[in-house]
Amino acid sequence: MSLRMSAKKGEAIELPIVRSIADLRSAIALRRAAGESIGLVPTMGALHEGHLALVRASCSGMDCTVATVLVNPLQFSPDEDFESYPRNEAGDAAMLSEAGADLLYAPAIEEIYPEGFSTKVEVTGLTDVLCGAFRPVHFSGVATVVTKLFLQALPDAAFFGEKDYQQVLVVRRLVRDLDIPIHIEMVPTVREADGLALSSRNAYLTAEERAVAPKLYATLNEMAMAIRKGNAIAETIAIGEAALREAGFRSIDYLDVRDPETLARVEVSGRPARIFAAVHLGKARLIDNLAIPG
Ligand code: AMP
Image (cartoon, rainbow, N blue to C red; front, side, top):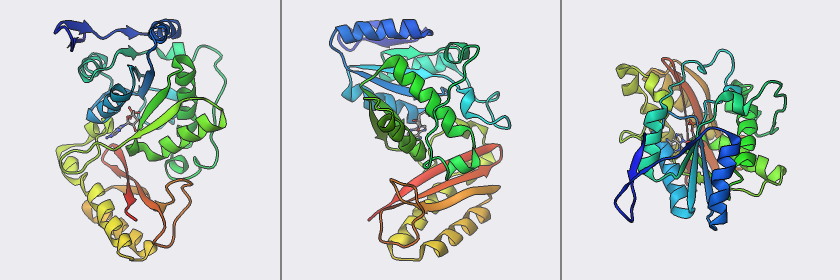
């Protein structure tokens, strides 16, 4: 049971957990009837302060915050970590309660993908590059589950993290293209004191790998400063790749400078641009991205 204190009365409140679409809709209907706005925070659980920043952003703007926890099989390739992905519902519920969420939606996989499920949501173009080029089923899995969660909860706004910047663009495109009237809010990346972006997959790192991991963000910062100073982008990427290999990253899926809206490659400095990286370290695949200041 997850308890938090009522701000008004100082009494313990249990975070309600719903597991079916019908119960989710009933709980939200009660809030709607009371005139409340609804914020949705989709997650795969194993929560950390990055996820809680989304919950807090929702709580600060919306009357009712619904967090979802579902390890979504559709967004994992067969060779990826679906089975071993960390799961801790009790811990997640306690953290959500503490952060101020009003409801946890934690459906079983069969509730979301019943026998015979055969529909996919596919956002083209934006998903051809970066993570989409290395994780072929990933974004269609994300787009499909996010569309379902949106239609199940019908929130006013949904909150996503800047750490998964490409995902935010994909979700913004799908709500625009499918005329889904939900505002998509992007929340800044939460980092450890040494710069490593918080991620549920950081749990895969050994102590030695954990010491190497912050060099990813440090390298992105150095690259951003070099490009801002006018250094050539191609050369800066080559230097960045060499720095990552030297630091001990096992392999680099991509290290790229791209347009923040279209994700097209940016080849000359002075334009709006963002650096995107995905690297492997031990069993973990780490991603990060950073705006190049104008
Ligand atoms: P996940 O559970 O990894 O699917 O992430 C759920 C949501 O939390 C996504 O919108 C992520 O972008 C967001 N998120 C994950 N890590 C962070 C972080 N370090 N800072 C901000 N948001 C994050």
